[in-house]
Every structure is written in C-alpha cells, then in structure tokens.
Image (cartoon, rainbow, N blue to C red; front, side):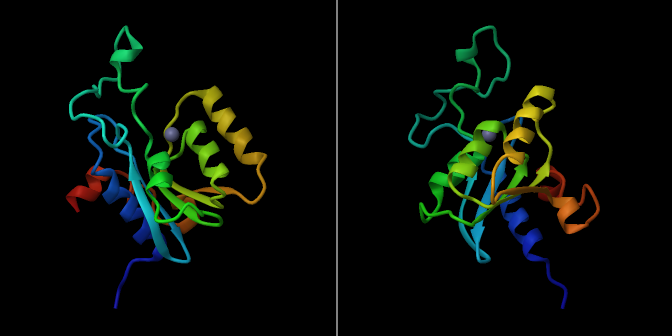
Length: 166
Ligand SMILES: [Zn+2]
C-alpha cells in the first residue's frame, strides 16, 4: 500500500496550517514535531485576541504603522507558543518558508534542533547573510531545504495554492 513519508506528512500539515492565515499576500505555516508526534502548529497572523479588522494586511504605505508589518506575528513564533508543551528541546520544525532572522533566533532559543523548509523567502542579501551567520554559529542545530533533504522533485509540494488544488 502506498503511503506518504513522515517528512511529506508533516510538511503537508504545515501547508494545511498556512491556509488558516488571513494574509492576502503570504500564507506561512509551520508544524513542530518530536518523535513523530505533532506538538503544535502555527500560521502568520495578528496576536490572538486582537479585534477582527483592526489591522490591515497592506504591505506598502508611507506610514509603517498602516502596514501589516508592525502587528503580524510570524507562523514560527505562533507555533512555538501554540505547542502543547514549552519544552521543545530536540524537536523539529517544518516550515512552508525559510524562517526570517527573528524566527530563527527564537527557534534556536527554544532548543529546536532542526528546521526543514519548503520555499526560500528573503531576497535581501544582507538578511540572507545574517541568517547564514546564525545557522553556522550554533551547535546542535541544522536547517534543510525539504527537496534536498528528501531528494524529491522541486515544486512537488511547492506552494499552498498547488496543495489546495490537489
Ligand atoms: Zn519570521
């Protein structure tokens, strides 16, 4: 009987979770697991408890306070707070997008040992260098692209839209 691998299963959970995001531009999801058990999931959104419609999903405005950026919480941070335990030592996080530097720092702080991501996110060169420097200077942490790790065809799970249509 055919069945999907654990990697595919957990990445599909991250993709499914991203569909909960209200962000009209970028839907990000993640899933933290340990010993093949899901500890929690997360997606990008405004802090839980904020009033519906109070904040905009706009990316561009002359005033930064009128964009989404100062208010949104990234999927990975939501995921860490959403877990059924605060002890995330030696867990693995599956992310639909490569974590930003802030999320990466929080993932490392939470003692998560591995990150597996689908899509590269930042196109900013200095941001890329910052995340590389972080990754290269931490013990007991590794980060992998899903397709490289699983040796599967690039694009197979690439986008949540694709997932939605399957
Ligand atoms: Zn982030």
